[in-house]
Image (tube, rainbow, N blue to C red; front, top):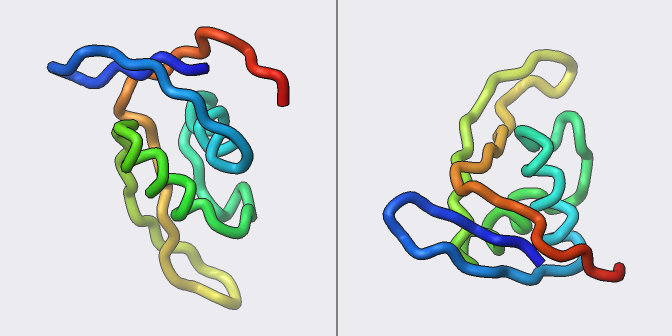
Length: 88
């Protein structure tokens, strides 16, 4: 269970599981990018969290290499606290 606090709104509790929970816990630790975390659907997990009321900013960065291009780097805007450890 997590406590989500957004600017100018009332805090609310949120319970998530699976990969969406993994993504939220990873975002609490710092920015999340598919370059460092090759999870198959990070953008989907971030979209799900956003639809639940968690505010997340995505900045796009260029990267080189054989498959040069851009990737998103997601960062929490909401203040998120773990209020109850749930059994996985």
